[in-house]
Image: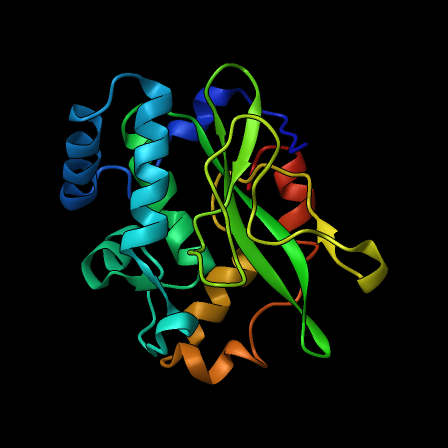
Length: 207
């Protein structure tokens, strides 16, 4: 279960990547909110919108780099990190505390950092994975048992990082800002784990 050392309300704030107050992001949030019966219904609708309406860069074989929530919304494409940034911005903008979370997954003969979110709807943090489904991946919104894209196998060196991040991990931001072609780094160039800079800071709630 993800953990945090700060109050849930802190996870409503935005920054230059999780752009809570960007007009287009907020407009989408308000549109989804207007169709929803309550917070749970809204959160599910937002999750499904990002999962299904924003293509995963690798699945779509789209080399464009997106990082900020507004970029993801404009181009409708992004890696797992970018899709999580948009979902967090939409939800935070409508009053749903949302954290960024990470897993370390096997990726060929190496490992890769995977991004997802956690939402607090009733005092309990629950992870949701908006990566995008395909024939071999099925992630669904769930307030019960997690229905994430990827199960963790510790025997393969995979990790569920337990921390709730207020802002994107620096290793993710630095990696995406250094490239102009997502596909060129997908198999050998994405971050493989959280760095020391990211992990201790997040446990103190100062990501």
